[in-house]
Image (cartoon, rainbow, N blue to C red):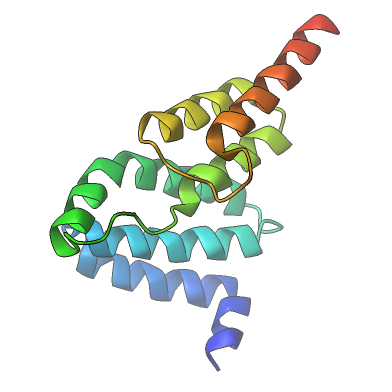
Length: 142
């Protein structure tokens, strides 16, 4: 039943929107609610509005990050790490796939500023170097 909910784009979005209202003023819970939307919109990019909503929700989560980080550390003072934050990586990949390299670089720089890890070998610094090379080629051959 739960998996079927994910397959129904509109019903799942409506369910998440109801929950969103309950956590609007709670940065910790709000972040995880945003993660659900990110997963939903990524799964349903063929929907006409999903890509636009994916960008908007990732940007909201990125804006929320300092409050989420503070709340996370407050709730888990002995943890030396944060949970994985898909909003940064998802948005970078989204922008890169659409050849919006300046935007991808901006988000990558924000992730580096916050000292985040994208769980890849080179991390965000490696991703940034790749994006900058790609941008140089684009400018060179334009």
